[in-house]
Every structure is written in C-alpha cells, then in structure tokens.
Image (cartoon, rainbow, N blue to C red; front, side):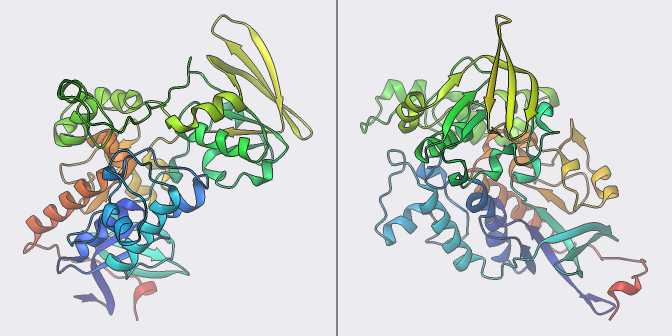
Length: 420
C-alpha cells in the first residue's frame, strides 16, 4: 500500500535495546513489514561502567525471538563462555556480545539513524529520521530505554557539566583518576561506579539518604532446600513471593489502583548491589549514610556539599566532581521527539503512561515498552526479563488485528513535503 508514492510499513520500532530488538524479532517473524531504528544496545555500551556485571541472573537475561538459538545460555555454550543460570554473574562484555549477535541474526534490518520526530498522521504516524527522510507507519513501538528519563537532584541542576554528571554519563571513569568524587545514591549504579572509581585511584565518597548499603547474598552453590524454595521462590526478579508475583502476573498488576502500582514500583527491589563488590566498596570508599543535601555551592573547580544527617547535624564535603546515581523515572513529557500534541494525547498517571493489556497507549497504534511500561505492568519491565513477555503480547495484539487493518490517512491531504 502506498500514499502519493510514499511507502507505508506496518510497524516502526524506536530503540534497539533488549525490548526493541525482541519486539522487532517477534514482529519480523510474521508477515508484517517493519523498520527498526537505533544503535544496538546503546544504553549498555555507552552508559554502564566497563567491567560491571548484570544484576539479573543468567536465566533472566534472555532476549526474545521465535526461533531456536536465541538464549544467552546457547550463545555462551557455543563460544565456551562460562555460564550458569544463577551461580555465575553475567558480565557486561558477555551480555553486549550476546545482544550484538542476536541483532545480527534476528534483526539484520536494523537502521542506526535517529528518529527525529513522530506525529499522528491519519490513522497512523509519520516519522522523520536521519537527515529529514519521512515515512509512514501504521503502528509505532517505543523501546527507548532509560536515558531519556534521568533523575537529577534539583540542587545540582545549576552546576556546570565540569562539576556534576549523571551516572549515565560515566561509563568510563579514567578521567577521575586522582580526583575527589562524590557519588549520590546507594543503589547498584552507585556501587558499580564506586568500585570503578576505586580501581582508577579516585578518592571516592558515597553519600546516600538510605541508612545502609544493601548487598545481595553470595551464591552458595548448593541447591536450596524445599522449605527455602517455598519461602523464597525463585523468579527473574530474585527470590521472594512479591518478586514471583511481579514477574509471573503482570496482567494482575495492571488492575491495581494507579497510586498503589506507582508506589510498588518505587519501593520494590530497592537499592541492592552485587555481593562481590562489598569488600572493595566498604573498604575503599568513604561512606556517609542517612544524609540529605542541605545546599550546594561551587568555588572554581570544586563543589561543596552541605549535608544534614537524621539527627540534624551538619557537615560539609568538598570534592572535585559529583556523580548523581539517582536513577530514572519514566515521564512521557521527556520524549521530545514525540510531537507535543501526541504526548498530550497519551493518558498517564503522574506522567507515567497507562497502557492496555497489549502495551498500547491511549493513542491507538502507539505502544510503550521497558521502563515506560513499568507503571502498568510492574517491576518486571525494569529488567531484560520483561522483554519476552512484552514482545509476545504486542505480537498477540497484531494477530488479533490482522484482517482489519486501518486505512492510513483516509481522507487526509498529504503535504507537499512527502510527495514525490
């Protein structure tokens, strides 16, 4: 089907991380036409500390494709890379190599151009990519990862980039060798960064509102006893019934009240770091816990943090650089490549999109995945493990809609800009 010489695809996928690649691999296995845009695993290659290991177990780190040979275990087996479902942490290097091979095999049509603009167009969408090329799509899948949604403490927003960074901008920390660096946060990103900074010789200080730094338990190598398996059942999100519920019943999670869903998303699976970093970080970094930022000042090349403890005591900390390992929160308004009218048409709760059972937003044909779907489907969507469920649900919706496809731009006037 064409409109004034302009080709139309059934699906456009924006993003080439685990969710985008999985959606494209599953959709592409049908008879649907599809285009996918983005650099493969960009968040993983550009924003995560080199040498880190995944928080997820091996069995929970698979991308999704409706074909054999797509799992992480098979990738490692074929290349003699050490692997275990639960006992062997997955290195970032191994996961990126797996993701790139998955892309080459199952999504070879990936285009690395950036999507500049998306707007509604008749019953579908018009996308502008690269140097201004436009095309039409009946449906669009947003798989944009987390970097659009960085959370930065308001006290730091006026400081120059030479003095403050978000953890997403600190995948390489060699530039901090010999310098004094404060990390704000006590989660996995903060602890991974602290370990990397210690390795390059930075004087590292962790400042956190939490009263403790929590680490996962070291694997024992033995099979859990039956009682232990019942009390703490295994799940892709870790042990425990709450994690088991969140990972196995995302549709039930959708039916919880809006405020409860978002509260669970904030609290569940809070800051917890890898067991093998405990000794390095606790022994190599200064740690200030239960601290709140009272004020921030800068003098030349230095930052002064004024901290208030729970007892009301004040202290000052002077450093050369501050890294905010303060996480991400999925606000639809942050996606500036979406047309303003399109963003305003998306139903949301506190800025987080509310999705149908098939990951469709309130704008027909527009789907949201990953962190953007966590407000509707729960903590599973914050991890790679949610990619398979997401891709299959979107494909299920496609199968249901097959045979009743929309007529794109029915009755609309096609602007001169996209006429041949």
